[in-house]
Amino acid sequence: MFYQTFNANVPKHHDITYFENLRFDRHLHQDFELVIPTYGAISVMTENKNELLMPGQCALILSDQMHAYETLGSSGCFIHVFSPDTVGSFAKETAGKIGSSTLFSVPRTLTNYYLDTIVTRKDFRPFTLKGCLYGFLAEYISSVELTSRKTTQTTLLSSIFAYISAHFTENITLEDVAKSCGYGPHYLSRVFSSAVGINFKRVVNSYRLDYARTLLQESDLSITEVALASGFGSVRNFNRAFTEEYNEKPMERRKPRGENNETTFYLSVYESPPHDRVTRVGEKKQSAKEKL
Image (cartoon, rainbow, N blue to C red):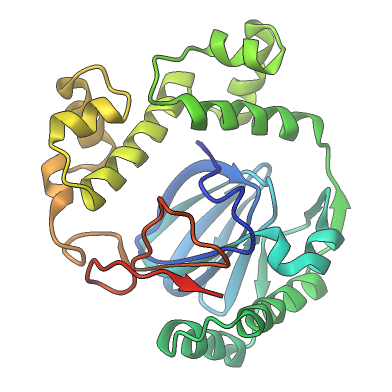
C-alpha cells in the first residue's frame, strides 16, 4: 500500500498514464484519480467495495480514498491523476465526502473527445484540461450519492504513509512510525492491520520496489546502487523481493520502453514543473516538460 506524495506540493498538476493489465496494491493520496478503460475488465477495490470496471464506464477515486486495482484477464486503461486545485469547485463539493460508488457511466462521445483532445492532439491548455475533466465530474456527480465519511482513521493513515514515503530508504520500524504519529505501537499496529491487510514490512518494501523500478528505468545506476538507494540492505534481498513482486529480474526491467512494460504512455503536466521530475511522452524515453 502506498501513500503517494510525489506531487502533493505541486500546484495544478496532472499525471496521465496508459496501463495494460493494470494491477496496483492498496494506496491513497490527496489527488483525484480518474480511470478510463479502453478494453477488458478491472476490479476496483476501495475501503468497503469491490466493483468491476468495464468500457463505457469510468471510475473516480476521491482525495484520500483508499483504493486498489486488479485486472481480470487482460485490460487497458488511462489513469488521469489531478490535484484538487485544478477543479476547485468539485474539490469543495466533495471535501470530507465519499461516493456511493466509484463507477459511473459516461457517453462514448465524452470519452472519444478526451482521447482525441488530450492523448492524440496533446492539447494541454488549462481550460481544455478542465473542460474535459469537468465533463467526467458532472457525470459522476449526477450518478452517485455523496455522504460524509469518518476522517479520524483516514487522517491517521495519511500520517502513517506520509512518514513511510519520506523514510522508506532508511531502516524504519513500526515503532518509528508510531512515535512520529504520537500513538502507541500496539494501537498503530491494530489500525494498520485492520485498514491495510498486509504487514508493515511488505508495505515498506512496496515503496522501495516502486522506487527501484523507477530508478531502473530512468537512471544509469548499477543494480547494486539501485538496491542500496531504494533501502534494501543487500542486492540478494533486492533481487528476491523484485522477482517475487514483478515476476522478472531487475535487469529485465531495463528493456527499452514498450517491450514487456505495463505502461506505454506517460505524461505529466505542471504549472511549474519540479526540477526532479522527468516527463515521458509516448513509447520512447525523452525529456519534455509541458507547461500549462
